[in-house]
Length: 250
Image (cartoon, rainbow, N blue to C red):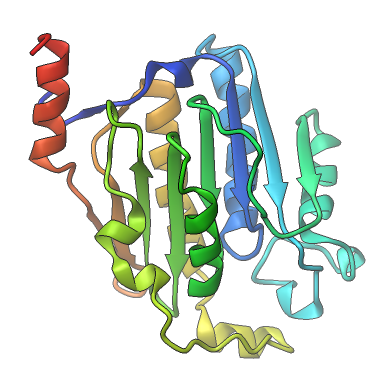
């Protein structure tokens, strides 16, 4: 094993349950990418089954048209339902939950959870629900031009610092602006047109490495879409050292 690489849990090379929390600006793009990844994994024989569930309690508004991949005919529909229905028409087998994520009764190690939420309050809720979760969690977030994609894992053998351990501000209780945008022009004042695509591409590459190669070259990235810049978050040497020790039976 390359000492700069992180060895992921091999259970992810079997059947995989993926939960996507939020299908707005970034989540909708991640969902489309997950459909491609699911197809590629099955056709390459990397895994036999990929089950994807998308959670979102919001409906499509006119302000979403143009920045998010929704159509005018879908205004008023639940976001998760609209996107999953459209993808399933092309042979994808996804499930939509037209509600905000509220945890599971059971978590498994072959589960991957992806958070694409737009508030610290929502991240705090996710953090509370993942208290006993030992699988992988990916946080995707951004503001006007910048953002982060970070993967964490609480399994002792495959432990990676959780996103909020790396960036405590992600779950701080500082005041935030939750005012909904009434138009695309207003929405672009808080998130530029291409920033969600930057975020989604970084997340999908991380997911592809995790599921296809079963290894990671980084723990994610900080990015700036305006400057066309992406800085990887290196795997901590202590994580690699611990994995090498386990491999050698120490």
